[in-house]
Length: 474
Image (cartoon, rainbow, N blue to C red; front, side, top):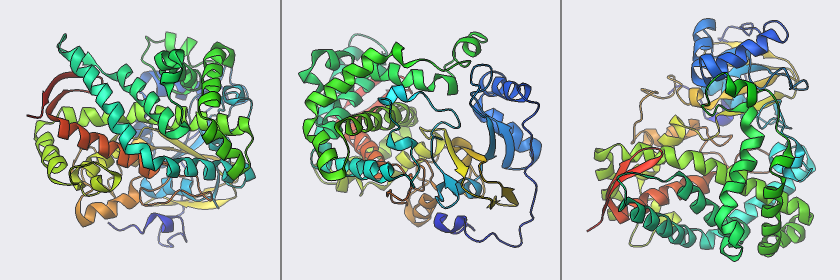
């Protein structure tokens, strides 16, 4: 491995690299964005869209358009500079170079009505005073919840898998996606907000589906859902959806958090200078968008990687039962190197957030592995993480799932280049960066779930959406 640690990747540009004009083009106005949008969503799909352009331009840095675009996104500029290798992508973590204001999903920003008519912390740049208040608040919530995190996780996992077992006794295959989401919703409400959905029957039954609809309407213009084309293009990708369609659901969730999460909300005011509304809307976004939404994508990928590999299961079972003592804790799973590596490798192969953006704060020189490019102030950088994390300069056999990739000394070094959380796995979230506040909690929680499964079961069969067989520990 020839690269320096990530913190140094954007330092002085190596003089031996040639300066190159950024290849690619945005095409003719209106026509270029529409053509790229159809390729992205329809003819090529996202991964192939970026791969084909890397091949065409012989560069991991190039100009292109990303959705959404014309006809009804008149205030959205789809022009981006794609950065698709580890070195160029890492510029997105340098807050001296990039501005993160209102670029969560590119130049498109869903209506602030979805978040109580305010810009929540994730849309704020590090230079905005409110950003530090919100991030400190969220990091405090995570710290305070650590005392109940594991016990609540195990308790809710017991309920989830008891139900899956009961359903599997009546059927040869059981979809676990909605039960998983219900588990996540209940668990996250308890540990993050201190709010138990069981106290509100309507929320207990439908809270997770309320979150699903709220998330979907914000993201539909930017994601593919597999509906028959051209219907998807015409009805899902052509305009932004109005908040009123899910306003009732969001208000129900808001009132639930307000009533049942009073202690957590009060800490926002007492310790961090947030109003009640600011605390609730930011807490709901972190709970619903970051945590619930992220885990809903990530955990099925993790289960799929494990359930389809019986040889790997034997190794995971052995480690889960021989290491970490009799009780699972955050510290005990840190002893389980293979389990942690499987979690990391899943995040590398299928990062739950596919795209990262940053707007150039000033003119600067951007380096890829083989060239240097001039970026102008105001230009939007876009990294497709699934391709970045398959950078062959960094990762051997990058398109292959290698369960033990992140074990031993070499694996520990590779964590410097595992980017899934708006920063490297070895980085530390702070108010001065935009790295996910719960980065370490996410990986440890996933490791706890894997360890839990292989202390409960000898084997699991299934895929990313269903379970077909479970063999309980004798």
